[in-house]
Length: 301
Image 1 (cartoon, rainbow, N blue to C red):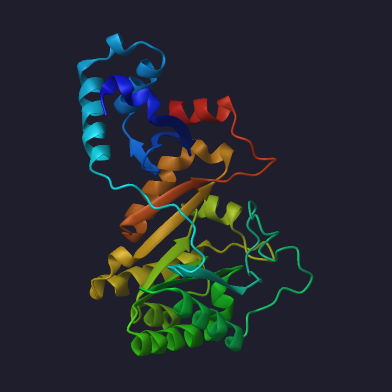
Image 2: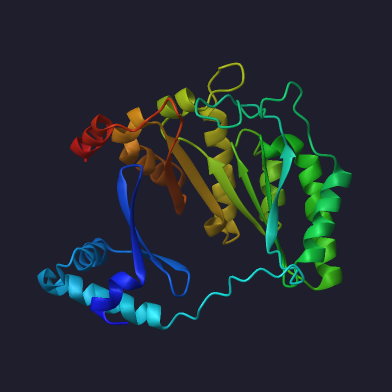
């Protein structure tokens, strides 16, 4: 692929996540999506606009790097074959209920608009795990989610032990993921997830005043102190076992909180010592990011 032919093989995408610009290209001939640097994106845009002669030396170098990388990628096999039976993993909604009332919740405060949210029973979890192991030839990754999944911790525990038994029988590896609001992440639960192949994501929105505004308890009372206590214990125990990389924190910010993104990130990193911290922007129909939000954020930086 020559630089001048780039526009025939690549589509460029620019996006913004919590005010941070992200650049991607779609490589049509292979099917890959690649995140690229700003110089790569600007160079591709110049070529597509017929201004390849205006490329800077840095843009040209970045495009060469991209070419070399893409030329080494094998083509993706995107053909559907119903006999292939390949399934890496699946998500199991173990709880339609939630003990929080987050202001940006997409699931109607965790209830999925149900009058009587239900918890998944152990038999259904075992059937789901049987299905995953049957359909996956190599291994299984199971995500427990909700609502708040830890409201149904006994069923999660049962599912993990059953899946590990299936893994031994089939000689297929199994891994687990859980995203939790952290309120029920007691020492007992922390001990369990650290003793099994779990990745744990704790939802926390930063400093107390922001977190308690965004993520109150179901009766609108604050939740930060309990979540912070549980997260600190989990991190301390994970450090002792060399599993700190298995713990992540995800913060969600409202548009009017964009100017606090750094505060949120810095608070979580310094207060809890977590290696992996992600910040996402809440996307609600009545919570639109305006130019004013972005300007305020940029001024703060």
